[in-house]
Amino acid sequence: MAEQSAELSPVLKQATPVLAARGEGVYIYDEDDRRYLDFTAGIGVTSTGHCHPRVVEAAQRQVGTLIHGQYTTVMHRPLLELTERLGTVLPEGIDRLFYVNSGSEAVEAALRLARQATGRQNAIVFQGSFHGRTMAAASLTTSGVKIRAGIGPLMPGVAVSPFPYAYRLGLSEDEATAYALRELDYLLATVSSPKDTAAIFIEPVLGEGGYVPVPAPFMRGLRERADQHGILLVADEVQTGFGRTGRFWGHDHSGVRPDIVITAKGLASGFPLSAIAAPHALMEKAWPGSQGGTYGGNAVSCAAALATLDVIQEEGLVDNAARMGERLTAGLREVADAHPGIGDVRGLGLMVASEFTAADGSPDPETAARAHKAASDKGLLLLTCGPHGNVVRMIPPLIVTADQIDAATAIWTEAVKESAT
Ligand code: PMP
Figure 1 (cartoon, helix red, strand yellow):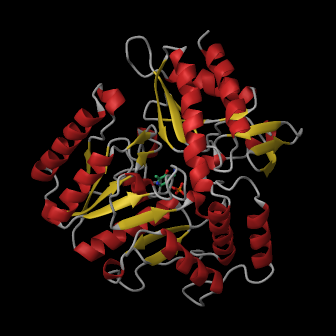
Figure 2 (cartoon, helix red, strand yellow):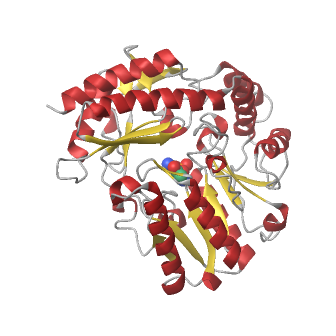
Figure 3 (cartoon, protein in one colour):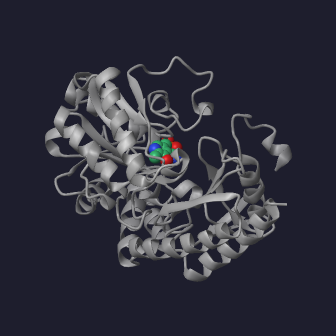
């Protein structure tokens, strides 16, 4: 692998040294048939597990029928059926869809729609936001300078407001919410006039920025300001959607209805597919022909997404995510109780993280990296996140069982112990 990897661009950074040969359910197997518990789910994608038989069957059937029904040339049945089905899981009234391939492209699509619909230019994002790596999406991303460095100038018109990150701010959640809303009002009064502001982008759980759930009152505060000023509220549900947080959408936890919902990752169990959803009255303001793409709404991806929805609903995966998330969080809290170096354990559903903090209160990426590596050496694949890389996150497939959660927690206990020495 090392020899062949030398031919790859150094721009790629691999989180674990594993060469995956196959995936089955919650497990990845390497070429020596060593089994790993995959608590990365391919960055929150394989929610139905690796190669769920129903997804495999639906995709195989579609491959033999029509692979590429190019949607600006011809329409195809899987896309129409998926659109109908998504209508049943989206919030009431959010019933118009547009498909592309990746999270970043969908973020771009949402931004374009917001600009065309409002005739305004600016966007507001929150510190630690991750909305993607294409140029406009990177302009909305503030989770780490590595995404932005050396590629500017980025898109103008993006204003960044503090996120209610209670733990890092050293505040209670209510105080952090009040502070972040005050700062947002200040931003609207001093930097980005409401008259120029097309959209506010929010991840219902700050993802790459450190796995921090948005407090419900903050989400409600955003909705109030959006309504007051005619700004569109865009929920980037690329990582939080499709049951990941123990509700179907991350924004369900606050009861706030966004204007635009962005979905990708868990949508098609690993096939490239993403979408934006908006109410008819908003979507009809998109300028015809201004968006599209060669591969958007791929027929095999749509068939896989339909099977994914079947599996999520018939196997009760949203409830499972809520229950297993509680079990995982409780397990990680026990580990943290025995290790003062883990300052915070938090999450929503099966998006759970441990934040490593040094004795002086500063972020501790070194210990986090050691714990992450020790876990992967012991057969548990994890990811780090956070602007400082000091947060270790767990995002298992939503099919995960209590035994698998306990096995992962046992490995994590050992890995953390090792990392402290
Ligand atoms: N938005 C969010 C919230 C994400 O987590 C990600 C990916 N981590 C993206 C957008 C970008 O998605 P993609 O990598 O598919 O372009």
